[in-house]
Amino acid sequence: MKLFLSILFTVLTTALVAQPSLVKQATINTTTNVIAPEEEDVQNLQNSQGQGPGGMNFRNMMDGETKFVTYLKNNLVKTQIKSEMGRSTIFRDNDQKRTTTIIEMMGNKMGFYITDAEQVEMQQKRDSMMRERRAKDTAAAKRPAQPANYEPEINISYTTENKKIAGYACTKAYVITTRFLGRKDTTTVWYTNAFKMQNISSTGGFSGMGMMGGNMMGGALNGLDKIDGFVMRYEANMPRGRRMEVEVTKVDLTSNINDKEFDLPKDIEIKPMKEMQGMFGGGRGMMRGMRD
Image 1: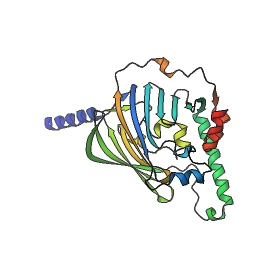
Image 2 (image 1 turned 30 degrees about the vertical axis):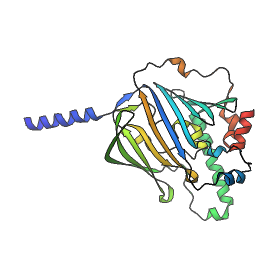
Image 3 (image 1 turned 120 degrees about the vertical axis):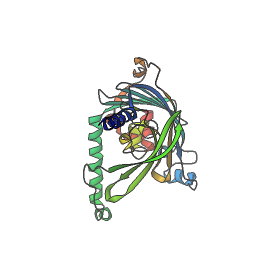
Image 4 (image 1 turned 180 degrees about the vertical axis):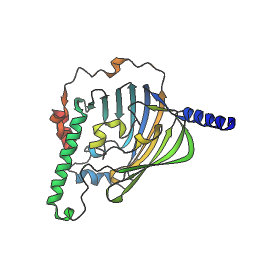
């Protein structure tokens, strides 16, 4: 009996030690690299979209390296994004269920906000429009339609492979997403079980871009929130043959972040997203938004 209790105590103690601690305040630096296919003809791609030589192609705006700095304090999250294209700052208030995005590009600034409920409504309208277009397309109508409110199946395959990232021991895993009609996507993930972040499952990449990630870059990744720890690196395929590599370069869990870090800028008018929906309708839509 004593031996049984001793073993039980050891198992319970180990399980408690292995549980990641929940972090409510942190600063995280992340680097994102989007790698275009070597065989892509940039000149032809620009011309095919009505752009002359040297034209700006917003579909490829994340190509190359982008730096992210994420500030977390309780239910507030701020993400600063810097690339060759410009700067953006995304403020997330999880109490208010509201996301505010500030974009600085070509010497101009613009800002917009949207609530979670409004995002759901916008997605429902997009889905409805897609269904209407499909109904008019005789070729598409012959293919099975994805049911409304369809949720892909997520499975995590853990491995024993380890390496250090930003000073933390990390383990490799695969996030396997089974989509409609059985199509599977696999994302390679490295995570630490030393901690979890409140309201954040990963930084950089799709996760750090807010609505820009969902509307301009082909959609956010599914399943990273199911990882038992914090994602320190992931590698994912993107539309048009691109590949995204995201890696945390620094984690600061000790600094005291001032509440003013999350104050919205006062030198710019921040409009409701519904007034700026044309912004994400493509490159020309964004250019109109930057001039308004």
